[in-house]
Length: 522
Image 1: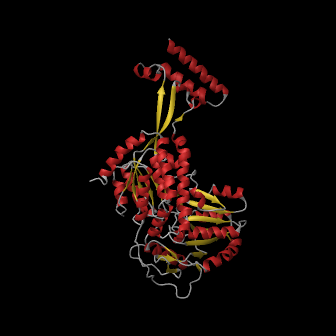
Image 2: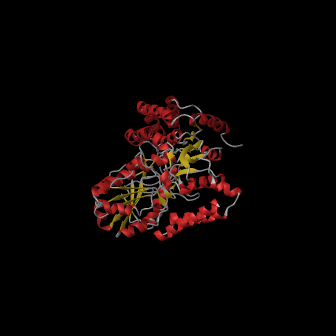
Image 3: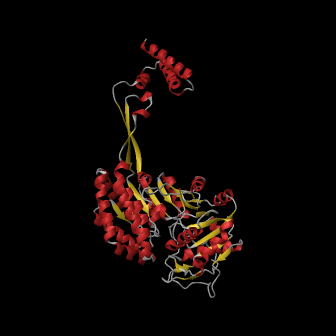
């Protein structure tokens, strides 16, 4: 039996009614939702902290603040973005004279959203709300790691006035994601690991179900010799520790021009030495990070900071779960025992934890540079020339986001054009990707499609061209019934007139059309 049949049937009925409403009418509910996010920040914060242990400052800055900005962008711009695009008559070929064309952005129908846990409000709202604003119904499968937050969001949508069957929350189980991929939906949005994403893409491809896949990252940071080293060091620390490293676009590979390696490490040394273990959500994250660390050390990398006395061994912290569909949260290979890391410790919230760790002089072909990681671990790799840095960076299959630190903005912009990633940020990182007016998505192993911005909103629609042909003359229809050899001469002349190289050739095309027209009149 097809999963979620009852839910999909109800969603289709609700979607049919919803799609008939104007975009501005739909946005009334979005305004209500934005107000409720502000009014219930305490409830949201309590739920997120209870689910995944995030502190209040991070919840405000990386959950509520960007989520409200994303909703406000839709309120301001969605009606214009989704309005039909009337094709200019100046772009109309002469052989389509009499036609007028408009491109309409029709909703897919029922969109399935397989949610993530690392930013359970911002990322989920950023996918659910554009789909609804575009005229779709949404079936949302929340992460099994954030049941409390899922309930808060479900209540927010209800209290904002969205029709009950238009937005439905499915059971937050590990089985729910694969089941939703088998349901009779029209589009799937998935945020998660590249491992799960590949399997999902294969199955959706068999069913010809379109999708947006926001997958893992192994993000790169370039620090050039002219960079502000203090700023770059702060950027590394922010990119390493925000959400305790549980971010798809966290810094994983730091390419530093050789002349500035020592200065950068000097700036980072006090931060590393005084860092406490950061609590992670799942044991599998720790095991996977330890494997990556051990692989890098075995290849010659130097562990920073050096192990503290008494560190190492198995943690006695409790386990929340073993696997996840979140970006980069891949478990260790079956049968491979994780190698205990000197950086390991027990977090204050009693979850599994790791101290922020850098791996100096890591070879670019090490696992930490080629696999996604969901822990506060990054590789530091010296380089000599710009070409060396680019070649080393391209050894990774991921292309989600990148950052460049340099005083030469023009050179950095030129370099950015050569970096294969969905976004490039110069002299900053991470935060700028939350701009509500810009698209977010990856390349390569980081998936396809985008969320956010005009492009993300339009991704929730299928373009439909509506053409109206005025008048009663239809030469192509007449020729289908009574073929006329002169038509071929007219067409040849038209092609030469409109596309031939040089004035003489175009003039010859015009004369050929005249002769063809004379023959047709006879």
